[in-house]
Length: 95
Image 1: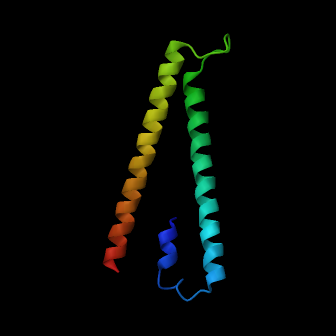
Image 2: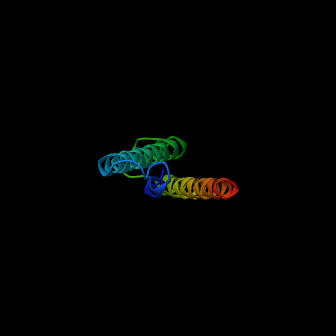
Image 3: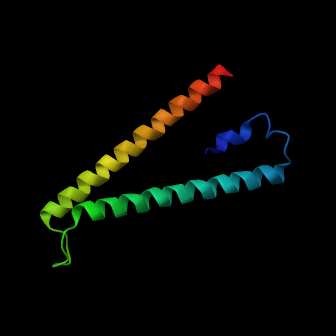
């Protein structure tokens, strides 16, 4: 969700206090979704890349794996977000 959604015709009739509450809720949802994505990234890459706990630091192989995993995850997330935006934009122009 985006704050720009508050500018829709249906929400313009809301009192200013309700608009502020909606904006706060949207901000909280965005933070929660960001944290969820980050936690998913960490869990996925850790599970895929870390094999042993014999040392404090990651091995060179584990470090490379984690970097590649995070890169792929973030690129995928950005692409999905872009595609979702394209679909929303297409749906909005059809109205």
